[in-house]
Length: 90
Image (cartoon, rainbow, N blue to C red; front, side, top):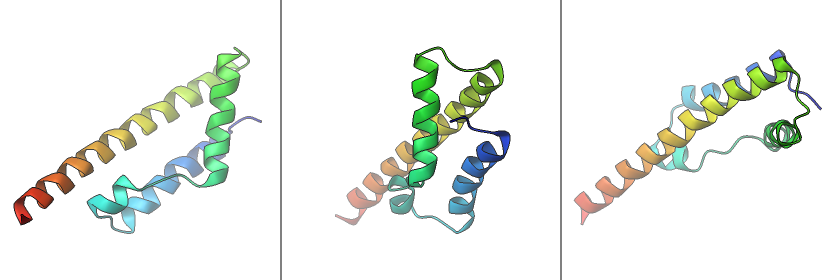
């Protein structure tokens, strides 16, 4: 299974739609991609470990890993905000 440019956009759109709907720190911390998106990413990562990606697929994976890094950083920041809010309310 490969992730096409169209599917790559779907993955980006999934997170962008989530953000556009309005998020709280709690909902951001709990964000997860859909099951089909997770399966696509896992397949691409697995095949990368086997060195069975085309150059285009490797580029797609690199770009998606950047997005995943951004999501992880956003979740970490949201968690800090939640902790700060919790400390201020006590």
